[in-house]
Structures are given as structure tokens and as C-alpha cells.
Length: 458
Image 1 (cartoon, rainbow, N blue to C red):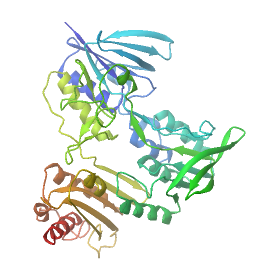
Image 2 (image 1 turned 90 degrees about the vertical axis):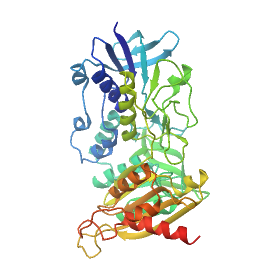
Image 3 (image 1 turned 135 degrees about the vertical axis):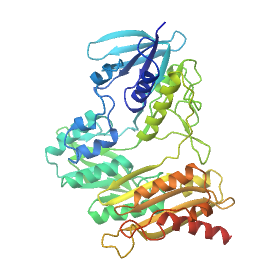
Image 4 (image 1 turned 180 degrees about the horizontal axis):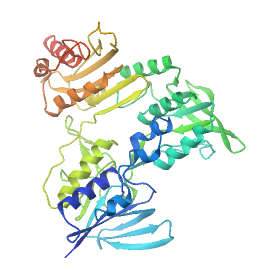
């Protein structure tokens, strides 16, 4: 008898799972239907700022596969179909056909909840003015690109996360005078410790991007229905920044409202609780991606990261297990990388702050280095911070800020973290060397050596 898999959400996690389940089981054994409320499926959200900035010329370049391509693999993807309710007892979902104006009821044998994340919002007067945008879906990217094409002069980005800084680069590339407003003492919090985030702020200001830290948005002002500026609170005083366009990048939260209403339990992080096979606590229901919880491999704590790398991996493993396999999702480190113009940023594992919160006796060493041998003509400065446990010497995390060639070194640290190496063991790892790429002592090895030396000094 043919079983039916229903997938809620047809992006990274959902379609990775559907594709993997199809590899495991043919269409006569497993019918697969994926519902997506937007008009786009299987797209690169991480590429959206680069489309806005003109680095990626066509929106279609961000699409991995279309519904027609999935149909050729016997996966039925229905765009503009929103799942409005889940009945886990009857194993049935209620679906609204947004284009056709119809309500459907679809039974399932297995359900994958892959609803992703949604933008974090708070009540802000004037948020409905024309010229105010978020950047979450490809439709958002198209709307923002159209606005850029109209040649605005000034922009304000509210929020100093990955998306906000990448949009700042996009606007700078298009010649738009841009101000980034962050409520914290620096940017990229909590991904970076404040001391490393301050280095990013200083570099952005040097590039001509205004950055206002410790500043909270209070309202958006407008004229004739269009935004004209942003009113903020700054050190107890009021501040005003003119803007022809405003991008709200306040972060994101797991989209769990539908799951919660259906009685699917959430975890400590606020995302859907899953076991190491991506099963929820409800029989027949699985979850993966930005809406699902994960375990941090260093702290052991429940976390919820909104990263395409994690979503695709969770989706793949969920699909394998739905298809009859037996594979464990091993946890996450939160490894991430980005750039703001010529500045690269990488991070993995715990920050100094989160390591202390997790109960570790922390060693934190920060030092300046170069991306190549320092005499190489294209050498760029870089700063690296390494975090280790004083008692055991175990590596806990690292952060890198620097020029071209700096940030991808974070992958070497992530590999060491993944394998629970001590900083002493890292010191003698046989990393490559040639002057155009590194000094004899690569910064990763210097970081390990400095942390190991700090342990000896206790």
C-alpha cells in the first residue's frame, strides 16, 4: 500500500528531505506532496542581499530547483498553498489554496514540519509606510531591488545581524548612503563577542557606512505615505536619521505557531523538539530546518540556528529516516561566515560569553596576524580570537575578522571542534604553508599555541 508523506515548507530542509526520501523509496511506495505558501521553492535565501546589490544579476540564479523539476522526480510541489491546521490524531492537514481560493483536506501517513523561520517583528509606528522592507523571501528581494533601481539616496538598516550587514554592503555597492542601527554595543551579536564585533563596526565606519550602536528605533516617519526617516533613542536622547528606504532586520524566530497549535511539543530553545533522528514527540511527525531544535556539540545545550547548512543537513537525515534508513543527526556548532565589502568574518562554536554561561572556566586569547606571510604583497591583516576550557584544554570556539583569505580558516577550527580536540593537540597539526597563503605558523596554530600557553600560566 502506498504511503503519503506531506511536507510543510518547500525550501531547504523540506525539499532536501523530500528528495532524500524519494531516493530511498519509489513513487509506488511513497507519495510525496509538499505545500509552500509562497511562490518560490528550493531557493537560496543567503543569496538575496547579493541580488539586491546587483552582484547576482537574475533572481532565477538563486533557485536550485523548480516545481517542474521536482515533478519530474515524482515529488508534487504545490506553491501558493498554505497549511492552516494539523490534526495529528486524524493524520490530516487543512490547506488553503491561495491562488484558487479553495480549502482542502489532505491525509498523511508521515508529516515533515519544515516551516522555517519568520522575521522577528515588534510594533513600530510607521512600519507600514512605502519604502519599508524586510528581506526574507525572494519576493522581498525583488521588491527591494526594484526600490534600489529607483535610485534612493539614503537608507537605514535596523539590525546588525548577517542580513543587515550584507544589505549594507549591497547598498554601498549601489551608491546609497547607508546607516546601520544596532541596539547592542556592536554588530553580529550574539554570533561574535563584543570586542570582535567592535572591530567590524570600526571597519564599516572606515568604509563610509554609518553605524549607530546602543541605539533603539522608536518610530518611522513619513510623508504622503512614504518613509522619510527613522526616529531613535540614543543614550537617553532622541536621534533622527533620514531615509528613502528602511530595511528591518531585527532577526528571526522559528515558525512554530502551526506546530504549537497542533500540540506538537516545543523544546527549550523555542523551536520544535526533535530527537537525534529528527522525530518529534508526536507519532508520524518529523521536523527539520530553522523551525527545529538542535543540540550544540560543545555545550550540550538545546539551540536553534537559522543557517542553510544546518537546514539542508537536517532535511537530508530526516528524509533518510523517513525513507526507512537509520541515521543520527550529530548536532551543530553554529559555524558561519560572511563579508562586508572587503572584510571577512567567521565564527564557530561558543563565544567567550556563551562559554561562561555554559559553565566553562574560560581562556580567551585574541591576537593580530596576517592572512599570508607578512612580506607577501597581498597580505591582509586579520584578528583571531580563540576560546578554550582552562581545566581540560578543550577547544570551545573561535572568531575571525580580517581581509581576503582570513575567514575560511574558521573551517579548520570547526573540524577541530567537531572532533573535540584540545588546544595542545591542535598546536602540531600539519597545516599547509606557502607565503601566498599563510605564515609558517598559520593563525589557527598560533591561536592554539596561545591558548595552550595560557593554560600553563594558571
